[in-house]
Amino acid sequence: MIQTNESLYSIPARYRRMENMHIVFWLVKDISWCMIWEVLGIAMIIPTLSIAILIAWRTRHMASELAHNLAIAFWITANSYWMISEFFGFDEVLIWKHFEGKHLALLPFIAGALILMYYYLFQRSREIREHGDVTM
Image (cartoon, rainbow, N blue to C red):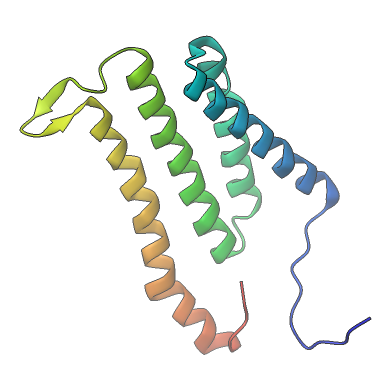
């Protein structure tokens, strides 16, 4: 075994299994989108987004994990909205100037990006000042 001074991040096995199932649901949702299986795709939003929110909640005490998991939840929200807009045919409906229905997905995409930007610009530098260069 290699000795290292690097800090370790571990999670309980039941959380890891939940994260793995989350990936399965996410893939089924996106495959359904690709194959235009509307009912299955829309049904997969519930477990995919629910688990993303639960993972974010369970990691709320670690700023890095919370920021990234919230960004994922917003990403799934945006992705799901975009899928629905295509399924119901309002993805190319002009809303305002050059913005179409699918462009409303930018709102949660941007929200996730802003959360990560805040983390890396402010929170992460604070963590480094307080605790040294701990990878989180």
